Image (cartoon, rainbow, N blue to C red; front, side):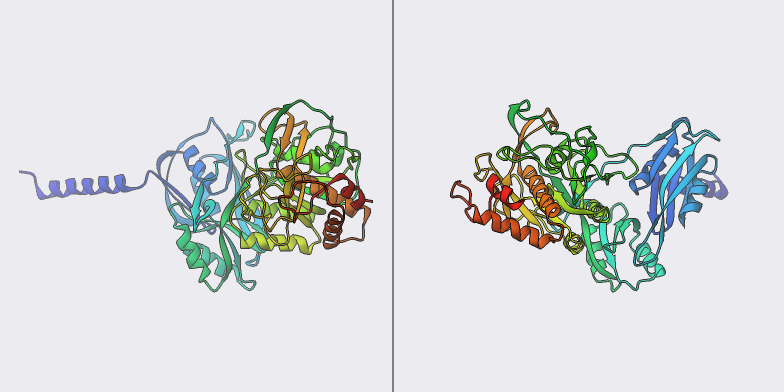
Length: 488
């Protein structure tokens, strides 16, 4: 018969085995300025991958991938990383965010390398954004935007973050907005409802998703009219918030500055081609079909990549891009993307830009649904529908009471959208061309403000009505004679 001590020892080992097996294989969480890790003989690369999910950039030497065992909770992030990488050479980069709660230090990058040798550092791919839906709004999973009371202290904000196990990813000081990441498994709707009741919180929303407006290739191949080279420029510039920009010699002199809002550390690119298409229109290197009799005028541009490779972006990224545009002197912003739902924070960003004297132009959409499409449907945004080359409203253009103008939306472009150059159609072209025309007016009327430029355009179009169909006669339509008169 086994002794009681032997039985007790067996139960002890059984309890230990159950405890160990019940521990999660890997858990990495960041909240406020703390790091928690539960890992048992886990490859370092897997742990760092979860740090990336929390918005930290990671680069490491693939020859280094030790098995890590670490168990700690709510340790200061710097100390937690030191414990995690005790046997490695590493370097950390920090980002300082300004806002109502004062300066917040955030871990932005981790480099892991062999002693004294950073030559083999390889940036790890950025994880794809996960889309969710809450309160009928398409948004980024586990992300929220928040505006706090102006008198909040750093200690109060930290307590708020710890209560919700959240961390700050980024901020827009000009708008007083923070972007927060909630822990995996958080109920987004419940967290938003809870924060709305908190006396320290003025406003909170999901980080809404916006989609690029897809241009339509009309099937005509080749180029009827060669784009012209834009000369060195001065004057009011147009910020193009789109899929990016592919640098080229034709537009080299038109570019004031650029930004890749999807990854500010890298040079701008354009995986879709749409942003580069709009750059040719906005800069005046290409005229839409139907405006061929007008001499294209050169306009400075600020291309900004806001879209990912799938043509999606977040409200926060767009608002960051708008503030960047304003701070770099843009007088017109061209927007060819949207959503079926409105955002209070985005409304605030539009008001901020308009207060700085910026005119915002947006494509109305390429679906004839007759429903509001945001941001085009916002009262302070110029919503543009699409005209065919003969001056009729395009049968695939959106319509509705929110439309301000209809402009030519067909153009032969030297850059394709996910394909070859050719003729494309859509409200994106109409919006970019409207932005070009308004920027030209501002250049020739330096004392004019935004409302005056829009009022003059409306009056000119109404005084020279084009001969066209009778559908939607209430929409002022562009025509060559009117634009020539407007820019006189």
